Amino acid sequence: MEPYYFMLPGFRVTPSKSLKSTHWMGGEPFHANAKCDVCKRPYGQLWCIDCSDPKIPALHQPDFSRLSLYFCWTCGNDFYYEIGDRKGFKFKGYASKREPSSDFPYTNYPKVFDRIPIGIQRIPYEVEKCALLVLGVMGEGFEDSLGMMKPWMTASDRRELSAYYGRDVESPLDMRSDQLGGLPYLIQGAETIACPSGCTQRMRVLATVYSNPKNGLPMLAPREHPEKNNPFAQVVFHICPSCYCIHAGNRCD
Ligand SMILES: [Zn+2]
Ligand SMILES: [Zn+2]
Image 1: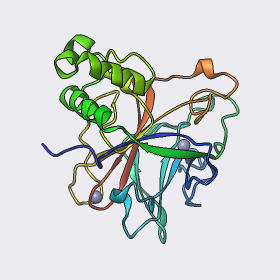
Image 2 (image 1 turned 135 degrees about the horizontal axis):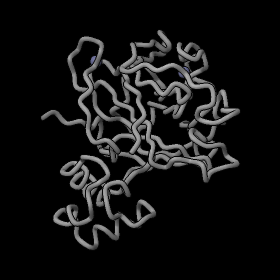
Image 3 (image 1 turned 90 degrees about the horizontal axis):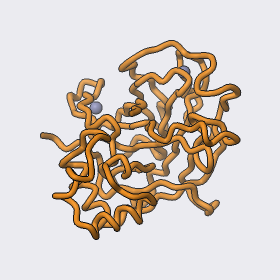
């Protein structure tokens, strides 16, 4: 089977206090023509990653200097796109298509999310090794119990994972986080998505992004009502390892 991760190691993505960070979440789309053609709103720019960061050599390539991860929650459609410094944003089709809903995700939904600097921190080796084992072996959604994870995890592994993720890790669901690269937890398991650009590659998982009204992206609840958030919905991005076409889609439990 072909691997479905795009790059190792993976990185945890968190809001950064450093105004010098060259990565950010939110903000106006880096590509001026990145608009959803169903609802006509600008795509939500979830992250805008500086590909020249020496920590992420897998994203050093000649066509684009910044990687923008776009999604439209108003419509919620899975879609494909390409980006390039010269060609801008290029829509490559829908994998599914719905009409926009006027009141989703919430009233007065921001046209553009606030721009907030983010940092990318390498996932510690011991945590990633354990995550690769648990998620790579089990990888199939949230119903797996601690009992099933046990053969792959010692008590000290579990302590380490719990400390890292900030919650008791009792199932793969507890390993969810905003992640770039690596093998993130996928709420609906691994998927086989073929690149639509004719290169017949299986697309690789690139990032998982969650709604976080408190100090991240208020994708599913407004900042003033963080209790209305759904912490179990993720936007999953896949990338083609040959042509860098991107697939964006949301997955929920
Ligand atoms: Zn839309
Ligand atoms: Zn491709």
